[in-house]
Image 1 (cartoon, helix red, strand yellow):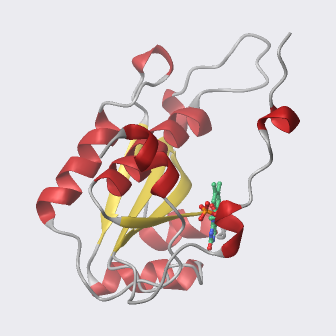
Image 2: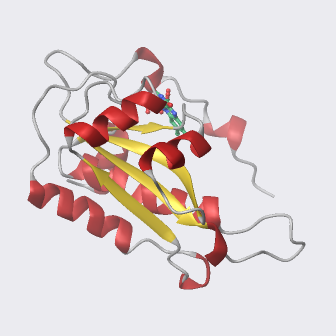
Length: 170
Ligand SMILES: Cc1cc2nc3c(=O)[nH]c(=O)nc-3n(C[C@H](O)[C@H](O)[C@H](O)COP(=O)(O)O)c2cc1C
């Protein structure tokens, strides 16, 4: 798909059918995350592919927002392997994991796979439920699958501020 079409067509799917994500498409999505840029090329992201019944139950235990998706990618990062920026107020963990997640979300859209970015969960509870190592923090969960019949973008998908409100030329 043409890139502008990919970013315009992507929307947050909040009702998935039972159709599974093909292994080849999943591989393409994961690969898009692999090539994402990270600060100092640290690649501190960890991506957990959750597809088993048992794993999906764990997702359901921490968030109501799986919406029936047959695959969830839990994107975490290694807190002990981040780059701390000058000023020491921030580090690269959240940022790098977000870029990886965004790459995968857009790759999914390009492959015709619907998705929803989730943050409505307690990251500590999610890490515990999934049995992640102490040094890893969960950044987000990406629901992946195919929209149920008749489901499309919510009305707010089309509601974006005009550029003049968010962009300043200096
Ligand atoms: C950082 C972030 C966190 C989000 N968390 C959730 C969530 O936990 N549950 C949910 O249903 N949607 C979640 N969304 C989806 C947003 O509600 C959605 O992106 C927004 O309303 C715009 O709709 P659109 O993606 O269809 O354009 C999240 C999106 C982002 C970017």
